[in-house]
Image 1 (cartoon, rainbow, N blue to C red):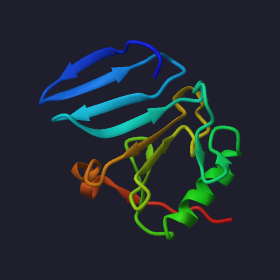
Image 2: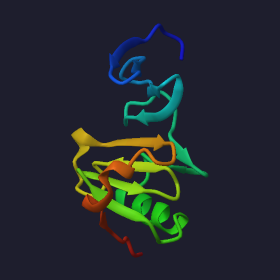
Image 3: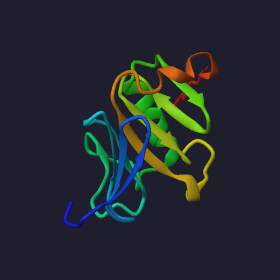
Length: 125
């Protein structure tokens, strides 16, 4: 990533690697990568296919990811839109909150703890 990260440790056996505001945040648990997050300040485009997720309209991004998720298993919880089939979360897109805008990619099972608090959500074109 080009720089030495700031490493923040938290139990149990988790470490958050911060490389700077224009770089991804990388999270490891028990020495395995579990999540990588990006902000709009990312030094490189954050893309899904050919779509630049931060430069495209929020509506287009939500609809495109929802379609690619099979229009199933997409939820809203704790201010995040969670596309379980894709392993992607968005925040700041559905509520137009530029200060909270972020994209994360996660491993299967990472959001399971929210279970019944997850509310199904749809995005139509």
